[in-house]
Length: 128
Image (cartoon, rainbow, N blue to C red; front, side, top):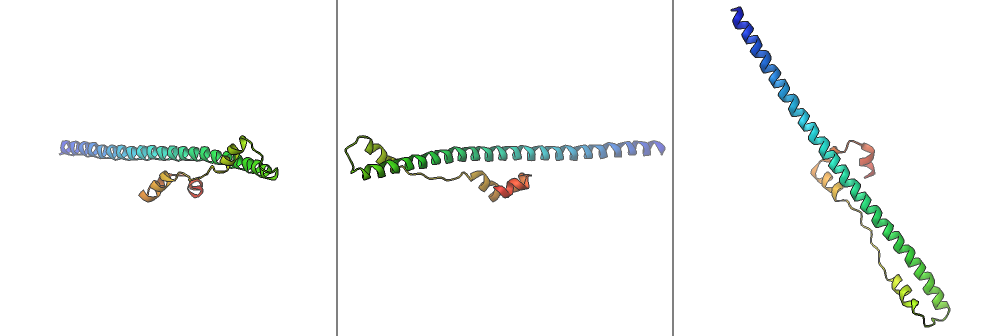
C-alpha cells in the first residue's frame, strides 16, 4: 500500500511539474511575442516620424524658396519688369506647391486592430 502511494505521489508531482512547466513556457512565449511586436511597432512609428521630419524640412525649404522668389518678383515688378533671364526662375519658384501629409499608417493599424496596448508608454500614446 505504501509503495502504491509513493508511486502515485511521484506521478502526481511529475504531472504537476509538467503542467507548471508547460504553462510557464507558454506564458514566456506569449510575453516574447508581445515584446517583439512592441519593438516592431515602435520601429515603424520611428521610421514614420523620421520620414515626416524629412518631409517637413523639404516643405520648410520650399516655403523659404517661395518667399525669396516672391521678394525678388516684387522687386522686379517695382523696377518695371526689365527683361531678365532669372525672372523666369523666380516666377517658376512661386509655382512650387507644397503638401505635408504625415505618415499615420502604423498608428491607424494599431488603433483599428485594437493593438494600441502594445505600446506600454502612456505618454507616447497620448502624443501620437
